[in-house]
Figure 1 (cartoon, rainbow, N blue to C red):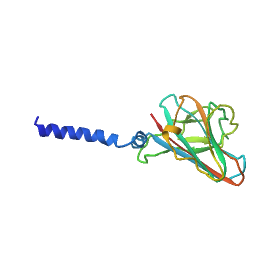
Figure 2: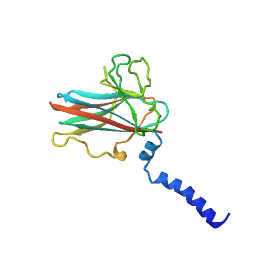
Figure 3: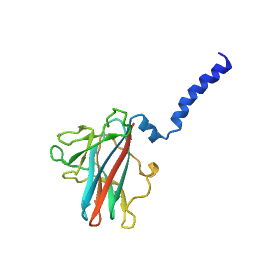
Figure 4: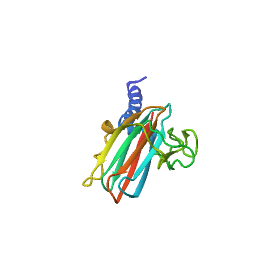
Amino acid sequence: MSERMIGAHLQAHLSGIKARTLFNKEHWEIYEGNSFTAFQVNEDMGDGDKINFGFKTPTTPEIHMIADFRAKTAAHMTIFEGPTFSGGLGSGLAVPIHNRDRNSATQSTLLTNINETGFSASGALNSDLTGLGGGTAVWQAFVFAVKNTPAGLSRGKQEFILKTGTIYAIEVEADAATSAAEIELNWYEE
């Protein structure tokens, strides 16, 4: 093989590698169809009102998640590991999970028990959980009246690799009257 052919072959091989390395890991997972998002908003919250998500992680793959929130007034968000909440009919509302690569047919592997007695992958998350309690608070974030959005997201500070086969709840509670809040979850599955 001539030197020119070797150079062309090597360049073609390296361009594929370069394309992968130009993206960070999270961005690459979007292109692979393994990145998902879900959100919910309540625009009419009183002091102490809550919005939340509940789900169970599968045994495989691992879930790498960032939870973010915004609020109109003072509020706080808590991530609970190992809580309980009611299953079956009436266990809140199903909030759709969206693949961030809109050309991908890949579904999230997160498990919910909405409208069922057991947990299964449904393409949605439980919200407005019934009977949420227990568990360990593994992370909290607060916003106050003068600043209603947490500091910018940083995977190094806010990403959790969630335990497999474990129930989680993520909840935002308004700490003042006449509030509104949003929870946004972003994760990739590996």
